[in-house]
Length: 594
Image (cartoon, rainbow, N blue to C red; front, side):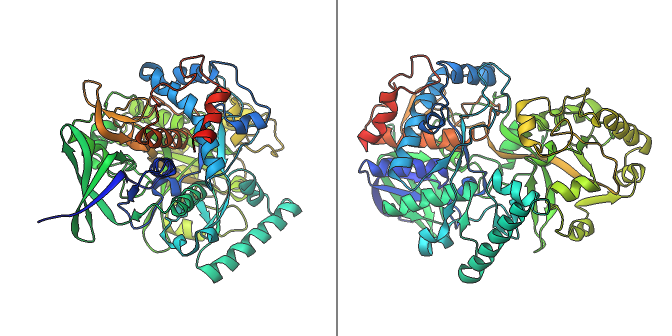
């Protein structure tokens, strides 16, 4: 069947942060850009994410009076990435990251806020810091998208309250304390009232936060630049002519369309969290590709990786961890479908512990989600368990103070979660153990041992609350000696089943510092770029801090856009000088060139 033909300068496949960053950058340089999106709505995983970006050395940090010693960020990434440390790509990231932030904040709708303190996940490691690297997207008024708000993918339902998005940090703090603080109660009342008004008038909340705000801000910028976006359009095959990727065949509304791209094609398809075959190859805990639960969009099935492999691209299977692991729980939504709840911060709260199916603790519960899952997998392997799972436990006071997983704190009802079996409850630890299939004596001993030192805020077994990141995610208002520790002693007692999930894949296409896809011999494939989760992570399979996916996504999208526009980005000014800070001339050049 003959295909319709369309010609542009740049074809971007995918509309997450990396794809939109590449499109915006290229279009700002005068290129004719077309974006296509497999899903009916735009935003990809970004729209469901926390909206944090990890980029050292930005002007936002400087404005806070935070100045990094030369080489510190590179030393931290080298420690984190280990054998998969890629010096040239890290240099590019550390140099162009601050430029990308300056460009987007100066020339688009994208804006960020940076807390003075947000520790790296391994702040005690060489080069780790207590703050100045993680920034969060500023909330965005969805009304600025006009009728296009309907085209933006919604947030993950499990991370909302009545469908309302909550901003990270202070806003969550207010909701957890609404019945313990008059000012928090007033804040929450105003916020709920504004949300109810928006739903009545617009059919959804208009205060976009976190990743939904980032996707909304980027999409507003795409619209301002008049970049066409074809939704519900699937890329089927790349076109190669004279050794160069010259476009792609796509399927739109049942018709085959040939898109010619004079400058090149950018793959930004969101990685492979729902590709069963590749999961079976790269996820050791899921040898058949199942037994894994991802809150990423269902359309993220590895399209970009397969498209590139068909023309000589290569996915390195040796990365230590193929995805950003997160402990997750599977819940039943009100409409009968199932949702995946990522457990980011509840594990760190005082009065929460995790145990294996045999009733024994196995980890510092307040460590990062990526580290937590590694410990969970190891514990299950050591026990010879057929599947990887754990239980998250707390007592009644803790549950009603902080909530747990999808279960909200007081005064929200929890009956639905009890009826569905998502939340297990019993009047005593022994009875809870029986309900979970654990030997009562074992779980009773585990809780008694934890409680014995928890009253003094100590955890000699695993050191919960002993690290900067632990304490940041705990409760600073907790009246105990440790913001992450309290005994479990006020029944009834509760448990939620944890399984292995991800918040994006790390294994991706081999690329160079200019985001060009490389073949097995390490040579660039002319005209082909990969960004976001289609590109192999520069973190080497580790998770150094909040936003280590979106930070590189924005940065390498920016790099790809500039490369496509003809700028030289393979040797960033200052990239081979001591890393960790961007020279003033490098960051300032972003404003000069656009």
